[in-house]
Amino acid sequence: MSFLNVPKAGFPASGSPQKLGQGSLSKKVQLDKGYSLHDWIVLHNDRSKDLTSVGGGFKRVSVAELQQHNQIENAWTAIRGKVYNLAPYMRYHPGGADELMRAAGRDGTQLFDQYHAWVNIETMMERCVVGFLVGDDLSAIRERRKAQSKPADPQSGAAIDPAIGQGQKPRFDWYQSAQVVNIVFMSQYDLHEDNIIASLDSSGSLLEVVAVLGPASSYVFKIRLHDKVIASQGMKVLVKNGKAQITMVKAQEARWPKYGELLPGNGVVTSREVKFHECSIVAVQKITHDTNIYRVRLPSAVHFKVPVGHHVIVKVNVEGMDLTNPYTVVQSLVPSSPSGADGCAVDILLMVKIYPKGVVTPHIGKLSAGDTLRVSDPQGSFDTASLENTEHVALIAMGTGITPMTSVISHVLSSSTERKVHLLFSNKTESDIMWREELDQAVCTSSGRLSVQHTLSEPGDSWTGDKGRLCLMKVQQFLDPIVNKEKLLVCVCGSPSFNVSVKRWLAELGFTAGQYHIFS
Image (cartoon, rainbow, N blue to C red; front, side, top):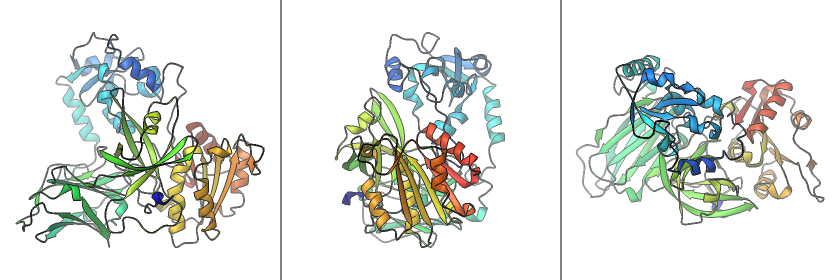
């Protein structure tokens, strides 16, 4: 399992399209037979069907007309100026028709960005486009958005999070030799490798650096370099003492008179565009009968490290439609030598369960070493600061819900504290237990700081461990030995129904929202 050696992660990135949070849950509904994502693709690609309700073409839609289309059988919404007919998609929407109706008859851009910023609506709903939002009253929408937004940064015009003081805003300096150029970013806010995202364009002329300043804000630098650097050689990123230094090799040996110039779009932002990168698959390992781990290597011109419990969005093209799935990045639990210590980009690990009747995972299941995969920047909201005042961390996971728990376990065990981790891991059969060998090794090397309890809902005759579906009594028995509940954080991850059940049981046991975190 040597290819699983990846570095530790630890700093939370900014707000996430995947709804993660203490006590928050993604709402999903059971779709009727014949209304799966695959069924939507089939309908969407059927050119004989009019999904616009207006006979095709592009209408000029006023705000007043848009407001009239607010019924479930006749629902329109506007997203970034385009008007979409939502009615054909109602029964296919994973969150249900009620959720979709929240955007009916109005501009749904803000709502869409809050929950689905990573979704490519241009391909997902291409044939549902009614037209474009026009008219003088459109300016009223813009004014309302402006009034509702946070104060603007006078230098960049970007929205400012009031929680970020002016002194915390990053700044940068530069120095050079004839061979390399170094850009150094500084801030009173503590910078870590986990909250710096850097990328070069393919020409080696444009550098973008994102410094994640808090749970909902980032500072973006967009720089046109004075001359080209060698993008194929990538960047060396070192973070130390609150400074982040990015070193790039010049395409031509020469001393530059200046670093280049700042481009429009610099400043504090409360939401960022979800960027995807063409990554290469280095290795694939089968860990159960239906689950693989993919070691994915970032392009040389992209650098980031995924924080604890955070995820990336994977985008694949299926029958001409770009589809996305979030996958929490897993962390190897077997002690290994540090990776990426020289500041170069590191690989990430994705644990993917292949569902034969799914749409996205069968496509990923066919990939092998040497193939490519489009992967986004890190997303998520889990904050390791929630662990600071704890003595115990209890993890309750089902199936692929083990993925965020791996980085939590690794983070806790690598810290200098005596904090203990307890894992209750529920699966269907013994062959479904993911990373069992890694978990066993981690228990053996944890000096008693990690305990793992397995429970199977459909155990075989040879199984001697706990049996039966997870229930209130099992959760209570798992948590009871931890005496000081005030120094305990519970993390939960599984299917939506599993998360709802465990959340209810925790409430019955007297836990409040601040004492647990739901990964959903």
